[in-house]
Image (cartoon, rainbow, N blue to C red):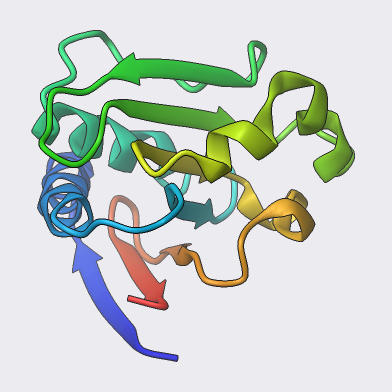
Length: 150
């Protein structure tokens, strides 16, 4: 398992890191969706990371955590991908709560990039190989990003 670590000093740097990784992840193509799981405590910067990720893929809409709607989709105009699917699993009891929302189809579509906040809560439904990003809150605004399966 390959891993990388990055440290950001503020929200702006966290968004920038999201953008850098969006470009890297979106340049690949696969048989199924690219899945990125985001883990970390409340306020760690998961949604801030997603904002930068989405912005660098051309999403113009305001990115908010889909805590109550669970899934928010954004159209992409990249060569390899057509949809960015942002999922917030914070309120879910387990992975089965996503099945009626079409998670299996979302994960199977090779034109999707799927970002899942609180991915540890739904890990059983995720593909064996997905990109896991753990965010640790260090100092006031400083964050450490540990990326596994990179």
